[in-house]
Image (cartoon, rainbow, N blue to C red):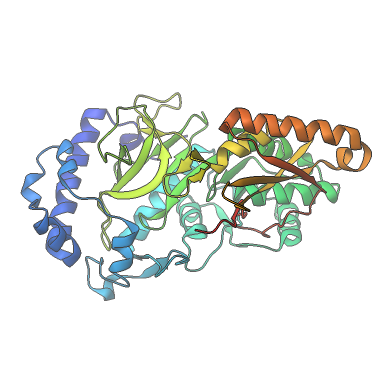
Length: 433
């Protein structure tokens, strides 16, 4: 199914013409309505009339979280506050939160792009969507909520936690789609298994997941445990929230809704564009957002983009799943490591559960890495000798992936802390900064 064929199957030439018109409009509006952009662009000696082609976007300076925090709370709004009907923020764990303001038109755009994505996953007005993402100041729950309502589906806004209640509602309400983070989805699967509930006892036909890092191995585990296809959802508070890009039935990358969000991939060191298909940092520009236009925002998410007609018939550019971040990369013994690399190695070995923690210490002058991972119940309780072999296999798999020796500790099932919803704490860095 396709939600809006005229847009989703538009030719690349027509899309670029639309993007240029919208880029020119948003730069003009930002320059004239947002003091931050007016001051910044004037300092850089770049003006709206300088944007004559899409390539001219490179003339514009980047926007970062630091810029957003410096404009806290409403310094980046392009409209009068009375036109803002909804506000969300980031967590603010490293300082002031970033604020995201929405007009009614912005909410409509958000609903529209998520409706496209849910339709990609086979969801329509006959479906019941159970949304375990958090509601509140975070954008997590709202994108799916608005998009589900847009297509006429029934949305259960259960939000985070209450795992047993989640399962009860899945059965009683005959939920056909569930939205969760990968780690929480696996937690639900554990509880289903403990309760003796089989996938065939449920009515699920699709899973939407995102909001934390994952690997293809983790997706396979989710799909195996629920016997249901799982589709990736991407977004971020600063741009609009979940729904910037979503996966179609092909599961070969996420379609970016490029009529609303213009993507670039840059080298995070040189800040120059990289060739299509090459990995780099994703930069996004909102082309249609009314209340708070964001231009050339550095996401720090590592991915690549690919153009061409998808097997589903859509022509929207596709991005690969996020494989790491340029700002949460771990530097260990001079080696750059992403937690997703370690997760990939762990999930390549049988006999362990997909729950782990990476603990970094520096007892003397050298970094030490301990990886705690849960053994599967049958292995942990019944076969001590096999545990040693699995531990060694894990250590070798991690070494092969990242080139470093690590200490692997196999622990009892369900002993690594769970967050009863939301994002798992994967890395504990105890090194002195």
